[in-house]
Amino acid sequence: MCKPDLLSRLQSATGPSRELDARIWAEHDDRDIVGPQHSATWRDAYFGRSRKAPNDECFLWQPGRTADHVPRHTESIDAKLPGEDIIGTSEQNARPGQPIKWMAIQRRPKGRMPVSAIAHTEAIARRLACLIAIERAKEDSNAK
Picture 1 (tube, rainbow, N blue to C red):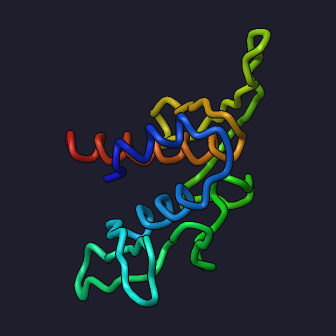
Picture 2 (picture 1 turned 180 degrees about the vertical axis):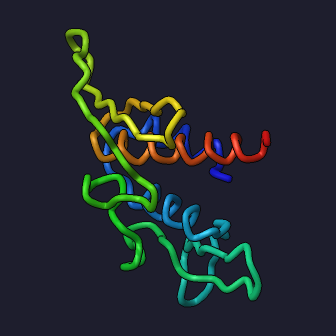
Picture 3 (picture 1 turned 90 degrees about the horizontal axis):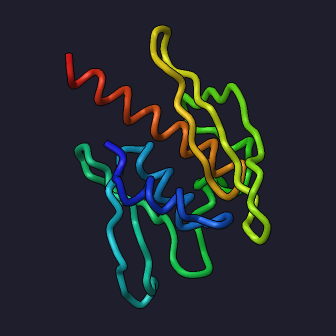
């Protein structure tokens, strides 16, 4: 299940964040974030520990450095998540002095209302809508 903190941080993010990219990747790879860890090799390093045996760990990020395998989810509209099916995006008009925001709409299974999300960038709005839809699908399956 997606951590509520991740959804909250995406909603408030004002631009791309490699830390959030790593957290999104870890969530979708069924990993818990472990860290910060300190050693001769690592300083303030965070790792993703698999929630399934053998509970392997992989490097995710540390200040100024992110693992190459982590997609740029918060930067690129093309860095889609598994199951991401955005059916529309639009810029949301802001009041004078307020930043423009983006809305994305994620398709859901037949008979289910689409999910929308608003964020500071189109890429973040797309990921947020997808993550919310995944959470709702989990809730729907648990309710059965």
